[in-house]
Amino acid sequence: MAKNNAPTLMDKLGSLCKRRGYVFQSSEIYGGLNSCYDYGPLGTELKKNVKELWWKAMVYERDDIEGLDSSILMHPQIWKASGHVDGFTDPMVDCKECKMRWRADQVDRDKGCPNCGGELTEPRMFNLMFKTFMGPVENEASVVYLRPETAQGIYVNFHNVREAGRQKIPFGIAQIGKAFRNEITPGNFIFRTREFEQMEMQFFVKPGSDEEWFDYWKEKRVAWYERLGIKKDKLRFHQHSEKELAHYAKKAFDIEYEFPFGWSEIEGIHNRTDFDLLRHQEYSGKDLRYYDQEANEKYIPYVIETSTGVDRLMLTALVDAYEEEAERVVLRLKPQIAPIKAAVFPLVKKDGMPEIAQKLFADLKRDFKVFYDEAGSVGRRYRRQDEAGTPYCITIDGETVKDGTVTIRDRDSMEQFRIDQGKVFDFLRERII
Ligand code: GAP
Image (cartoon, rainbow, N blue to C red; front, side, top):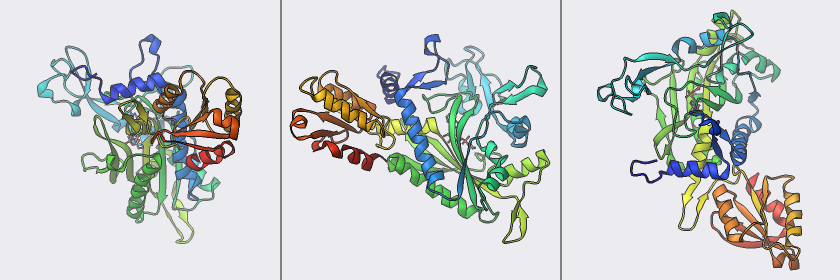
């Protein structure tokens, strides 16, 4: 809630997400678990659609990228080699009064605790990886980590995937999966959470061609946001300064979105050089070089990485789509990612209309996520679907009974027009798939 108690856009979006079944606080009946969220019926669909759109662009439409689904728990040496055990840390300060914890680089120590003004401790380094134990014994030797990024699962499978997919450099490996970080200051709803899902692609290239591939992926990725339906003027690049660069990166750009809480990163594009493969070669003792037949030489490839978060993209899509109008709240989600593609309504519950509507609903649900509703006035039913982000409502009325045409109502323009009942499937297919 804002200081003057008027709900902010993020508050309003949060309530819509709960009301319509997009996002719930995790463990809500126990008072909630901070920074963890559950996705409801519509949230689950949106999440699936965002992932499918990414997978389509990154895997199906390309011959040079293969998919992978590696395990969350991996050999602990992987995180030594990657630098995460020693370097994946944030400086942290605690308030001596209210005990709140802050990232030292995000507070002004002279002003004290942002919550109560209390005195802050000296900064301490805090590792963001969650630790657990594998097997029955809880000791140092059985420590394993929940992965803080999916990328390492790709590096350690580089040769497995290359051989199985009969790929030659340049080629990439894409993966979607959960990652975990014990963030000191999570927040802004699902923007920064401790459990989240990443969509990462590692593109392996010949050293020397890395700059060119970096530029290629930077442009390719920002263009993909149009497919997600994001407004162009809300996106920008931010180049990492020397100070901001991660320990593995030679060059990095973030794609940022202008959220109500300011411009923030939604995707990172990194030139990771040969850092990761070299380190895994050193720590595993295996030769990870690639044999380039044409040049008759062996080398460790460079890696261009594109990395984004599913949850963060869902928030981006929801914020971007949210609009308040005089008479309604509407989520203008792109039809390709909208959870429900169409709602089917009989105008009234008599005169054969429910039967026709049920039949159309049964036909459509074989291919699309559709919704049937016969409760309340048709105007109220439209409003509910506007809030849910459903692009089309199809009404069966008196005319349908006479001539077989139905009314289609467009969410964005609110315009209504009639089409033949038999053409509804093609109408949806052309706009959605
Ligand atoms: N493999 C590189 C990597 O993990 P990153 O910039 O730390 O790079 C990449 O993360 C993306 O993952 C971010 O742009 C964001 O979309 C998502 N992400 C990172 N931390 C997150 C968190 N705590 N909650 C939600 N999404 C997160």
